[in-house]
Length: 203
Image (tube, rainbow, N blue to C red):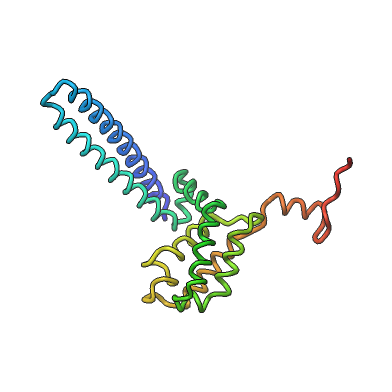
């Protein structure tokens, strides 16, 4: 993405967030006024309830559009300068999501009904182990690519037989290349030396 496109995406995310909050607040006000009006048998009750539902629907629509835009931006490394995109990508790289992805892999391996999963069983099992390893960090972009590979029926060569089967292994290599040891572990190795146990604390 060029810088102009990134800025435009950031502005659109901001507008959608503002619209979602504004319509959500208006929906709450409309529902509240409808409840108050109903105690007085007011003719405004039904119009207020109807208005509340309209604003609630608009709130959901804005939220979905924002979620969809974020999802599409996750595959654009240049878009990671946008805080919302970076934040979502980092959540995808968190251990809770990684363990969920690992369980998905192991389930598909146990099921054994997808020939592409069976063909790449070794690489997938290795990926599942790495996802479960808390000593490893995963680059946010690779975590997003992993979710797409496992869950996107259209874009994933693992799930869509219409896509080239060779893309499965190439994507797995790219994802697994995003793992690295946590910084504190690397620093400890630098201090103690590879293969040497850490120094004992005096005590």
